[in-house]
Amino acid sequence: MPPSSPSVTELLQAWGRGDTSARDQLVPAVYQELRLQAHRYLQRVTLEDAVAVAEARGIDLLELDEALIRLAELDAQLAKVVELRYFAGLGIEETARALEISPATVRREWAMARAWLRRDLAHDHQIDPSVP
Figure 1: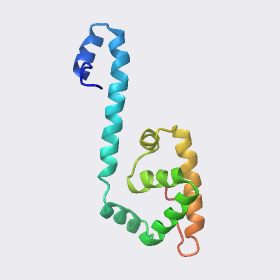
Figure 2: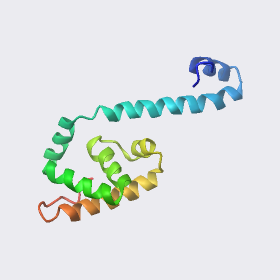
Figure 3: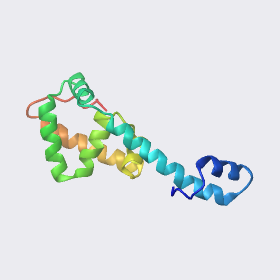
């Protein structure tokens, strides 16, 4: 919100008094704040977190990184879905909000990315297809 705009608290109070235009101003303001919080959350995912997740699933991190680079060259959004779902641990809905795409698109791209990575990594590792 620009500095001259009413605060979220003021908008909530106005909406509570029945001002429907306050609601129309409130939704974009709150949505933007949620996007900023999600972005800050995603920045906190550390290399140690990524290593722990990969090792827990029995995957060589270097091989996975190389596979993700190859995937990103083919489709950057598929690689981003993997990063958010696998490394950041986001759910379908959270990933959809972070990427500003529909949950159905996330499900479809998550399935495609997993299949592509399974095939790409299959020559060196056996990946359990039941791992979400």
